[in-house]
Image 1 (cartoon, rainbow, N blue to C red):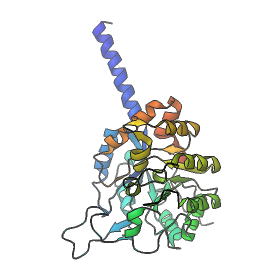
Image 2: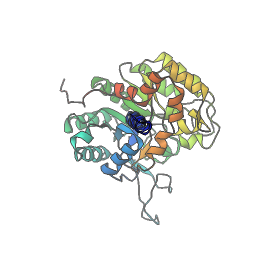
Image 3: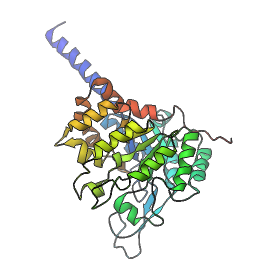
Image 4: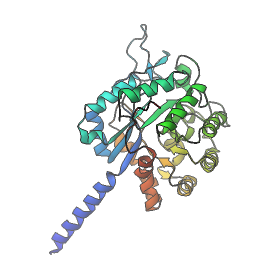
Amino acid sequence: MTKTGLLTWVSLILLGSAGLQARTLTDAHLHYVDFMQDSEGGEAMLAAMDQAGVETAWLFGLPVMKKWQAEAPRKPRYYLGDEAPLYYYSATDDIVAQAVRALPKAQQRRLKPFISGVNPTDMNAADQIESLIRRYPGMWFGIGEILTRHDQLTALTEGETPRANHPALMRVYKLAARYDLPVLLHSNLTSLREETPIFLEELEAALSANPQTRFVLAHAGTSGGVEERQAPLGTLVPILRALLGRYAHFYVDLSWSVKDHYLLKDGKPAAEWIKLIRDYPDRFVLGSDLVGHFDSMKRLMDDYQPLLDALPQKVAQKLANGNAAALVPEKGAQYRSD
């Protein structure tokens, strides 16, 4: 073989390896719709996944919708666009289910849809979830993102304030265990102008009462509404370490605000986070947290590459896709009458 031929052969192998590696990512936090329940659609989402090297995604809607008030000069584009409230919107799950069903079978297998469109303060929530399992057999692989403590989003949402240990959600967690479905839960650990984890007790109450339910804490208990306006919670890593050590059914989602304000410092992974992930290699997942618009998926997922590069290969593989695959059941939920 000539030198040129050898270089070409090596280049092809390297390109193939890079492509293979890129296809092993799982986006474990992807919203099919935005806060107006609009979406760029399944084809745009899949194209973005391919570009980002995302083979599989946990896919869900958004359980709330922004109201377009009559006096508003234009239709809102985001939940913080004006003072109009948000309300719970259960049809989001049907939007997701119909979008997935419209895709070719091979593409459907790349998606793990979750049920999200429930009011977390409504004692009917568990029954509503079970009715969706019955309506779409084999469709659902998890429950969430359930929105509880979420700074301005919580304040703008009509109705009772949701919390991780609300009686309605306790029923949902029991149902999740019965169907072997993980629960992706958004529950801020603290709020604006608070330097201590004032909502941690609510989360621990849910964890301790439901040892058979797999919980994934969205954004590691943070949110942009808090972290962008005050100093990061200095005790976040010790809190997570304690929860991971105490509850074997507790997992952490590293998307959005935790990535931007804690995990990476000037694009480099923080040493305390590397150690935490190495100590609990089976308990973390990655995600883009995009909402209905997907063109920035590659950039957001590429942000994790320095972290993956800093971890041992086996740990990096688990974080990139193995943990997300292990958390969801092999097949979607089937209704049970027992």
